[in-house]
Length: 128
Image (cartoon, rainbow, N blue to C red; front, side, top):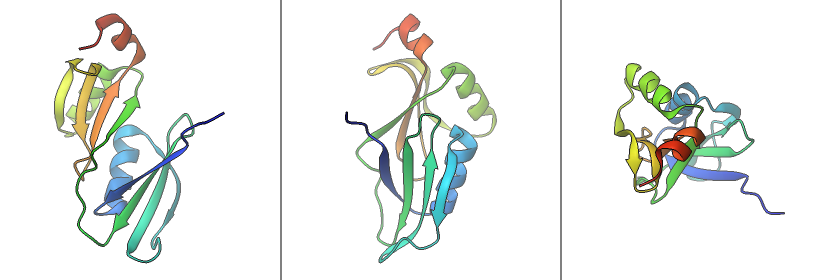
């Protein structure tokens, strides 16, 4: 068996990112450490409902948004879009057909791109 279990993302401020991911995407705090070691200024480990852990690691050097995308499955992408938009979260793309399927696109505080999708919309409304 092979299973992706953890991923790490460099962030400018681990507390800001921790708060954003827990408030907006509902990730749960697994643990945090104010100092993650040399040149690491703190880390938060956040777990999703399926047990995957996202490490948000603040680093001393300037960061650029990673050349990757985080895909989050939600119960209802259109409802999640309405909820997050109402709370002030800006989306790069509203729910609709994207090149990767049906869903919405947004970015976290550091510019890391996030795709939101749900199984029903993906199946019924199709992909790009």
